[in-house]
Length: 194
Image: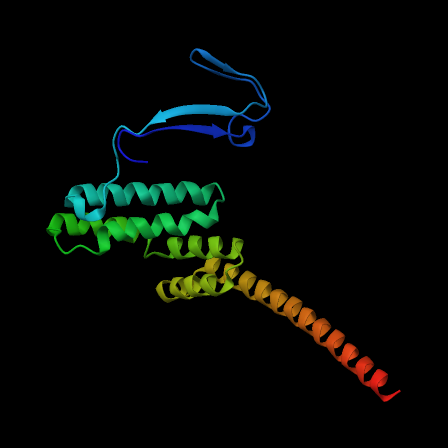
């Protein structure tokens, strides 16, 4: 939407209030109904990184990181990585920070991007979305920082088992595909010989 533009947004009950009655201020929404909002874009809250001063960049990065943490806790693993990457974008591609700001920007990154807990969480998120390759990368980074971390070793073992199960499943699938192909080919040869 552009500034000043208006839109009607219709939200299905599954994404609004579901099958319960909702009471908000002067409105009562009966169960199972679509909710319609008439909205107007008054202004943009978020600016591009180059439009912000250093302090604003650090604040936005912190907010994005926190949004990622909430998504992680809610199990919304598909969006977690994107939030963390956006947070990093606000503070890693800028050389204009003064000393105090550099420390603050580094703190935003260190707290959530370059420590064992962050690597562990990202590995968990990748495992939940069956992206075993990226999960393995995060686990290796975590073990570089703390080779004796018990929780990381446990998730590494879990990942290896999941990879083995996935490989076995794939092998069975391909074996069955080729077995059918071979059977079809031999039947065709038999038919051609007769």
